[in-house]
Image (cartoon, rainbow, N blue to C red; front, side):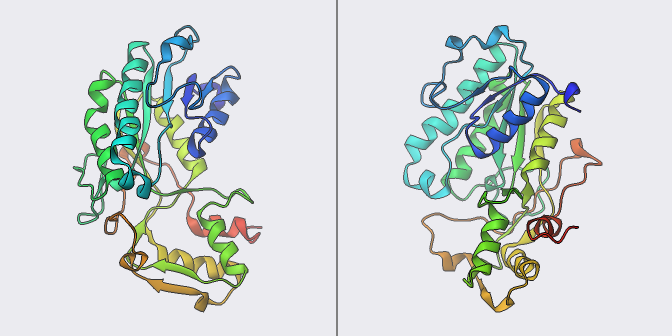
Length: 285
């Protein structure tokens, strides 16, 4: 598998997704660089001083960002400077070097009133984070000279013990006797990090461009929490059904958002959350 992967530069290699992408890139090319914000600050990214043009890179992954829905809502100008201007600048610089850029977008570009959403569905964001993602989506192909690929994601999780990711966080709360508050009207498509990595490299190996949804099947936060309680063998009454409005967050959330997996990934089988919960609880043997 790894021998067929394109040589890939990863910008944002210290982040959750970027770290996984860099680990995969290095299995095929041990000298594949993983750049962090110290070397490529999003406020003023400059690849010219790093000498990446002479290293044979075919693709450059832009996994760097200033994350957080609440943070983007509270600091729109500061985060926009990084997440929009910085991202598009990196896409242009990579394209100028003949390196195809890949960037990760989000299901937050949609308002949830027209699910399910295909690759080409028009954005309709309801929060600042989503607006920033939508603006990059609208300008990415021009910035990348038509060579760019946008991988649109929902919530990403893993099954690494101790990571504290989505499923393990639920299991930990329930096992400790805590209450897991879960919104029945928050519908999303939890997707395993391994699937995100595998799909991204599959798309790059095929030199795909445009937008590709990478997402597993939809589920509500409430149903996921109940499934976690079942997997953990805990009382279902520890799961408290709520609505998104009960969270009283500083930003708006979209309605139920289901991403349709891209036709570019036809035949790919995503890991489902029930299987992931079984792995985390040791019941997959």
